[in-house]
Length: 107
Image 1: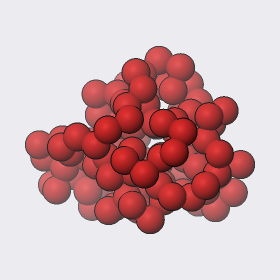
Image 2: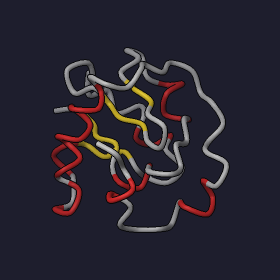
Image 3: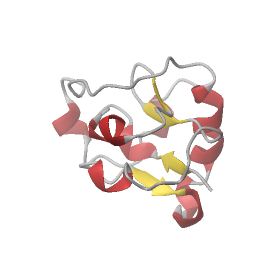
């Protein structure tokens, strides 16, 4: 099972998780990061690094985040790979506690 970037990442894009990934399975879109499910080795190093708890194991996703399994898989084939940390989005702190952001994601 892979890890999944969930809705909390939208409009934030903290990249602390990217630095610890041993297989570089993160991909970066304009508003969101995703994990390529075929590249993730389930090491769990990324999960505790996310400052907003946006990364979860596929088998621990809450019901309202199940769609993000497919979203991560689909967008990982479109977004470019990211292997180094960057600054979060400029308004990340304002967005980090906002729920229900999926409608803001263009997929």
